[in-house]
Length: 357
Image 1 (cartoon, rainbow, N blue to C red):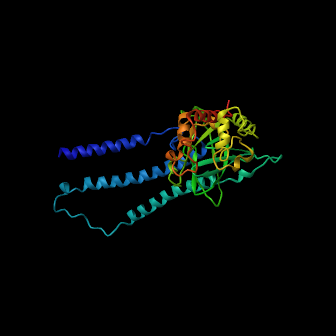
Image 2: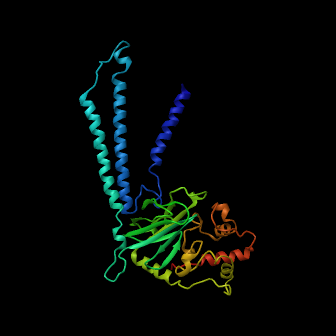
């Protein structure tokens, strides 16, 4: 008997922990802590659906408990036979009408928000001078990294999306190889990146990411895309419009920057000899044609390879054996090709690639 009671105590404890843990979450990653209007709209739908489900569960449990208490055998006797009824028009009408009302209660706001969040007509709006009125970012998902192009500004970056706050930012989503899915849990989403067609949607960012513990929001690939799907992360930096404009100018100022084999810096020499075919250090021009992520602002990033600590040690481990940390990615390993001195010089050069003051 005591053994059975201990089991029930364990189940009760696990149930209580589930309730408490459901309230946990990081601001930069949790859908329960919305950081924009889109996220709040989706959160509203989530709470409405959860409330309706909870209501149904409570009603069913209440009926179940009442039936057990009122009609238990010990109260009515062994020989009691309940009144036999063929049916009740009132009850049948009740349990038909109530579900219909609940479905309408959920359907109406769902349809409303679906059309509201899917409205991207303002994406192509321009002012009298032909300048786009809203920021548009082209997002290309690749195995296993993200490219962010700002066509109106002529710049491109990778792994770290930078956006202004308190305005709608529109996205064109596409994939370069297989299906992926773009998702920033705290801000809204998700929407698929397909190979053959472009998906469009918008998000709004209303919290400065510099106030977060990590300094960034976390983005994820939400579609199983291969062995390193779980490691296909990106980060999002949000900032006031004035700071964003300064960032754009700084990125545009890298036009024409290339790594030279004749440079006095050893790290730059090594980069020009071994990395330049796949990576660029300019945010404009031929950057878009490179096979690997753009590294213009690598020193400003939050992570190496999207998920490793942003340190020279982690970067050296990644350079030596990228397959160990992100299986099936397309970057070759360089283990044994560089001395420790050369690795230090190369990672020092990469960490020095910055546009932020």
